[in-house]
Length: 200
Image 1: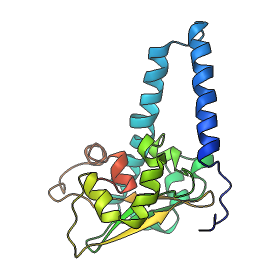
Image 2 (image 1 turned 180 degrees about the vertical axis):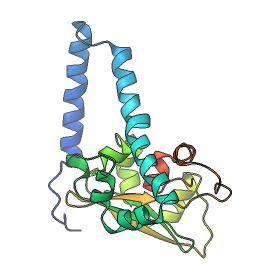
Image 3 (image 1 turned 180 degrees about the horizontal axis):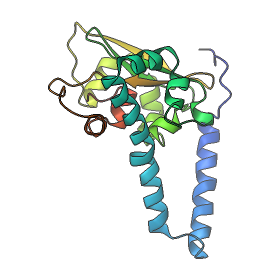
């Protein structure tokens, strides 16, 4: 398998960086420079609230505004930029739409390229070697382990992110939400739904 222009760190380097970060964190906490609880809350906010909330707002707008949805699918970076969301991990982004015929899911097989501005911090499982290898070989089985049971008639397409191009999934709008406003729709959208490992 070629690296397709990947210039990001691979497993060994990522583990080395993680160890250095943990060591630095321990020193800062021991010296009283950082509060452990505050740090945990900060990480949780970026992992589960701030970043994914950005993406959820984008999805909700696409569900309610066909012109915006068209712009989002044609040029994800520009359309997401209309919200003011941008950054180095979101400069090369393509949005892929789930349909009645096809369910899409994202992976980065060689490292962990991920659109931070709209999804927050990548979950641990996204960076794990088992997910990165198995989702390509047996996507239906892996999705079932996430609780996503899809009919055999539905195609599954796996999108492999790189340093040059990252992906975000536009989930299908749930039935029965026609009367919901944008903000209420955004509350339905999850990070995993925008990776493709959950249904909204």
